[in-house]
Image (cartoon, rainbow, N blue to C red):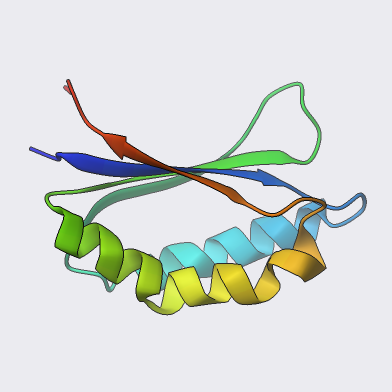
Length: 99
């Protein structure tokens, strides 16, 4: 059972939505190679143009930190200023229930 998670809030710069979605597709490819990342989802918030969320889960803090310091986390940090109107907001979560 996943015990740890991340929720990342993203707001695309106007006109950069297609670039953000392509970037998230690339991120998904990188994350597939992370053994410690149990699930990873990127989604567009309906009714809020340019607003995206990433939600991912981990068994332990070691895996979560490895993800944040890994290639996907590094790429998010490196591309944030170019793609997003505000810095990505990262929430560290503890899972209390799941299906």
